[in-house]
Length: 381
Image (tube, rainbow, N blue to C red; front, top):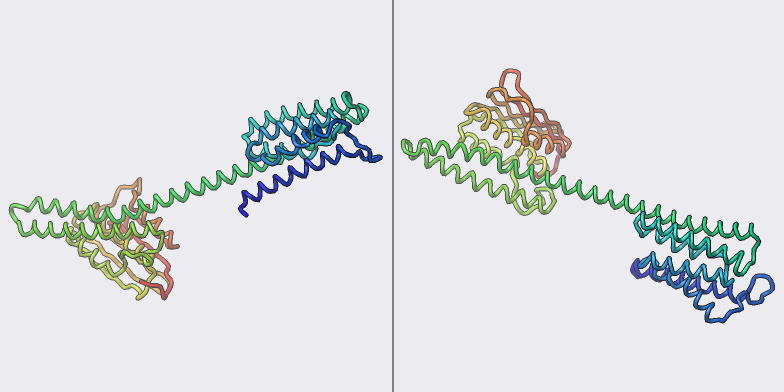
């Protein structure tokens, strides 16, 4: 049985139990076994149904069921059917507190307690008196306290549900924000490097098109190759993002340590002299390998953009537990201030794998980017 059907069955059972209790109280009084209610039987049945019946649908129509149940409780008190409506009053007011907004719920509580208190006291002390003034006041106050406690409990449940709902919404928003940042970082890493190279090579082709057509055609071929590589990398990045998996688990290839040499060649084609030393372990986790590649790629992009046609040294080395990627250029010092999306993305990527990242001016001039990432031996490269 589904949870919803279980709740409906429980409410129906509670409604039947309340109706039965009211009919039992109408049939006997507690002292000598004589009937406490001397009116027509149909009126006792109707009153019992008014008190208990709405409990079966209290979750669907909380305010309506509360109004009908409390009207039945007042009628029962006036008819001397029963004078202790603790359970039905507390149950329906609990439902109002749990399922209705605070303002409507509070207004319903005030109205319910006013009507219930006035009707119960009138029945106990005036219409069908069975208590002295102190007894009538005491029983009325006790009923109102129990009914109010039911509403307070329901309101507490509603507030807890709202807190949980807000927490879930906040968590969902955080996940969406992180996913957007991840997509932005991947696309930035893929696109910025290739577009920088394409822009430089297009400028070269345009400059030498008339005087050196062979060199212009070479630049155009390089643009074509770089564009194709960028499209392939973007498809691979989107495959990773859509599957929410590590690169090694996706169908599309993603760049890694074996692709560094091609990256160096593309950078050299843009006019930067690259001296590279790569001493990487035989097997590196795919995510770590991608991080090393992206850090190197973004660093070389910055060299192309900021260092002009200078020179840079790329070193990838490893020891027993870590792999280090370092890029040093000999260009001018870069202006301070906003570090830009590239450096921020590199730092986030390295920190995601538990590594350390530094970037800043070198002592002898130029700029140095260094990333140190831990890796587990035996993982796939």
